[in-house]
Image (cartoon, rainbow, N blue to C red):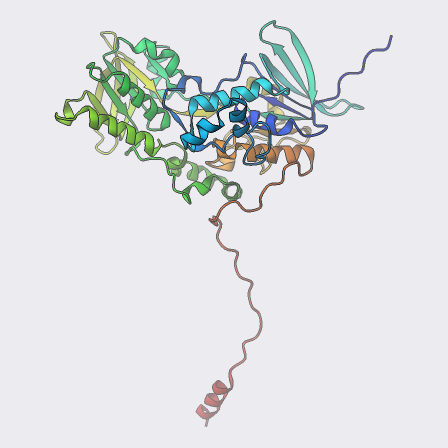
Amino acid sequence: MDTPAPPPPYDLLGVGIGPFNLSLAALAEPVPGLRTLFCDQRPEFRWHHGMLVDGARMQVPFLADLVSLVDPTNRWSFLNYLREQDRLFPFYFAERFQLPRREYDHYCRWAAERLANCRFGTEVTALHWDAAPGEEPCYRVELTDTATGRRSTVRARNLALGVGTRPVLPEAFAGLAGHPRSFHSADYLDRRAGLADARDITVVGSGQSGAEVFLDLLRRHEGDGVRLRWLTRTRALAPMEYSKLGLEHFTPDYTRYFHGLPGPVRDALVTAQWQLHKAASAETLAEIHDHLYERTIGRPIDTAPVEITPGTAVTGTRPGPCGGLELHCRHTDSGAEHVLRTDAVVLATGYRAARPAALEPLADLIDWDEAGRYRVDLDHRVATRPGLTGGLYVQNAELHTHGVGTPDLGLGAHRAAVILNAVTGRTVHRLPERTAWTGFAPPAPAPLDRTPVLPRPQELTRAATAGR
């Protein structure tokens, strides 16, 4: 009896299914002859589940869906989702460019549950590179079914890492690690009920998550005497840059410009451009101000048990002597230090790109930069050692090489299309040459005109007269 031949390798296997790899799956699905598989250890799609607060809205327009900015006719577009949900007319009359967060999450779930190339409950446990003589060089991908524990192995010519980011817990909060009343905003909705008997709650972090958590707490604790505090290390609660020309930093044009800069310049720019990608929206800040204004009508504003304190860094923490929490703080401008006592802390302190454990068998074959980060080319392909010839692509792990647009959903479909074009070696999706009015690079120097300059006739006459 003949042994059945092993199935051919996948052309592309995605590790993790967040919005970016989901976009890649959606754009890859209709490509004829392209075999793709996307795996995620979670049983279902989940996107910032702990921050799906009522009233919270996206910071990008609805066109920043999985496919529309590359292929608006694709069946996985947000408008087609609305059609399938019989919500086109309600959306039309709502006249909202930015979606509720909960609706974006539901849209992604709708797509993830229907895409045939997405497999949930499947953990990628190890990635190997096989280049045995006489066989096609491929990645060997070890999978584990998280429900049954069953293990299997598949092969792939290319990989796309889309494992997302992990919450950042600053070192200053190490003294509260594991404390039930100190947690990251990523877990806010899951842990909010545990704050019910807290009489003093502190939110740390000036970005959109911090603003949304603070606003939600304001709404939930109006008139009950609970003291709410918002601490930020930044000197001002400045709004997200949202001018039309400012938003051109989130175009492929700026990505190409940023990628061509020297590494130290790129690192400095990412830090300096915090207001482009880490600040809170002007709308959310306005809602906070409106709420406080309404809350204090007819009485002095300092009667509300609310403190908003920018320019204050937390330098250390520990559990308090009476069951509360102690935050050791330093005022940035004055250098003054003080101890703040509170009952609970919500850390809206951002996220950082994660390196998946499954990548460890390939670690020695990756050409890391001096800081231990991926070197990523314009096609989002990671630089590897000569022995590894398969494509290794990353999504949302290239802030240091591609700039502030890296985590932005508005560039997700474009990046997915770039990766697909690179994997297939052809133009699967036609992409525009120019996407911004702004020219970020200096103009090219004009060529030197080496034509000899001859004196004009009147200059020759003057010279002859002067010589007499």
